[in-house]
Length: 233
Image 1 (cartoon, rainbow, N blue to C red):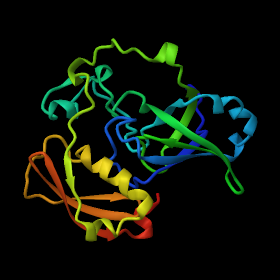
Image 2: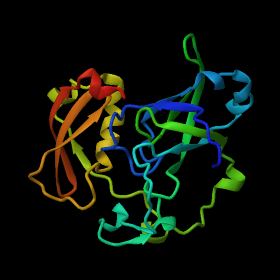
Image 3: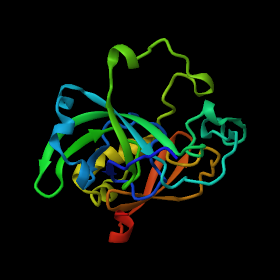
């Protein structure tokens, strides 16, 4: 066995997998906090990190750990109908359930109870996700504008128009509104579902949002406050 240690966990507004952007950086308004495990709260471990604008998070798909694996998976980008090799995708169902995300480092803060924490934006991680390592993003080595995107193309996916009635938007905490609209605009539905009459439910930032999608327009139908058990793992 290769020893691995959980060094931190992320605190985000997603208590479940549903609605999380399919890639990091798609919704820049999303804010999250990285809280280190007690044995890794030595501030010296972060010395110099403040000089970098972005970081890599190496983490575990904790909800997708399995004893068996398949050499092929069905990428959502292809509608869930076409199989591709697992190593040609970012599917969570892998021999080792490890994820990789590039996020913007907004700030490094000192919390009286949690020690030094990292505030990041653009994260695509569920609340409580275990983080295995953090590395700085190096523009001269990590950026490849000429790179090909394979079957995914070179675009971040379609963006929906979001109709959010003011009386419903007012029920969302003010500091969560912009991020929520950004998440909804990225179409949280499974890619193979296109029923305009269906109302989906998504938990985010302490509220449960009901919405439907017709063509290129997403309409919010309801907003209710989630119970404490639904808002934190």
